[in-house]
Length: 202
Image (cartoon, rainbow, N blue to C red; front, side, top):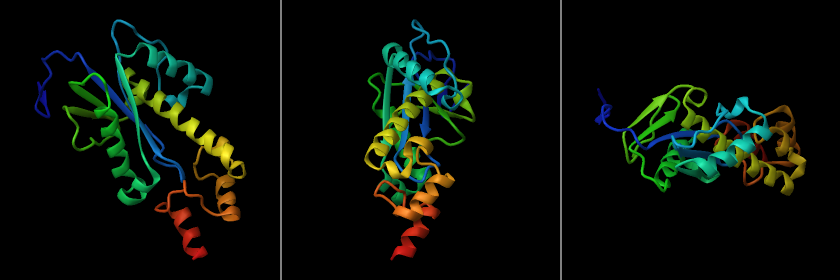
């Protein structure tokens, strides 16, 4: 059986799972990760990162970094999100993560329903793969731990926005802070709630 020119009868020795975190927030980068798990060193408890407690995610992220055959974390900047749109920036960040792997994958499993253009190997998109494919689960954990830490760092710089609570998502708390204090450079101008505030202030 072949798909995208790939022979599924071939040895799938280096399959990378790829996922993203941060498509929906009003602020911050979109972060992606790619992981090739080592069959000789299985990691118990992998799941969709959103279904894990912060402590469990942190512990698993360490296990993944110590036991995966290869992993990479990549991102797209707020400027790239505003220039390309969030989908284009996410696809770019996913490709960056795959290209940054120290072990070249011979196949990629991408969470979602779209494949990033320009991948260096054949790939398949899997809807809700972060809850069903261990390598994608591992990628979702690395990406979320990384992005959550970025939001905590941003909270240290601007505690009035509450980034430690909402992680950049458009909660009532975040929207109220935006109205009161105005957008930061980390806010995505292409997202409607931020764009409207920028237009009002001009």
